[in-house]
Length: 216
Image 1: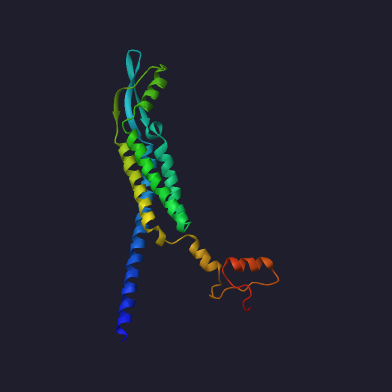
Image 2: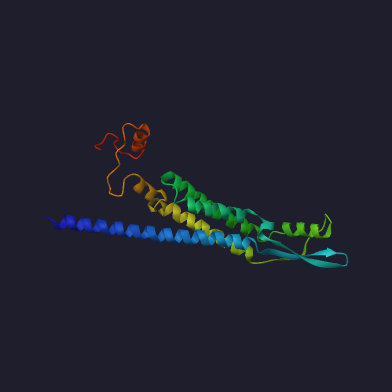
């Protein structure tokens, strides 16, 4: 008669173990994707995205524009995404879902801005006007590098981290977990009893969910 409960308990334990393993894998993947993606966006945004020449007198001079000169959005959103990645572990429940969505949107925005700026010539034209002093000057022999696409792909890594956080973030630990476990009770495991002569201790005990009138 005891075989069925044992079997059910074993199946429940196995399901819990599989869920915990998925949570650990998703957590590690999100951290890796988010950190690598943000670092790559910041690095690639500082590289040359477009090159060309500007006519000066009878000749020409080379000009170039880096990613931040073309669009500052990817780098800014990478910083936002990195902050959101850290904040995911500082909040819980609805707050974690909101921060995870912000992480995903940061990656999507960084990727979109990078791909849209891959063929942009406005920054190089502006550089040509600054170089020549001619407000009507435009860049010639315009070429683009692969760095905008590297930036866009890195933004997609941040997006993937956000999607993982949205899907599995509810099972991830929070930074405050250890503080709450250790702050609510002494190391011996017995909750501290509030001193009735000190009102502030009574309030602290209520905040911890303890009975301030318990036996001392």
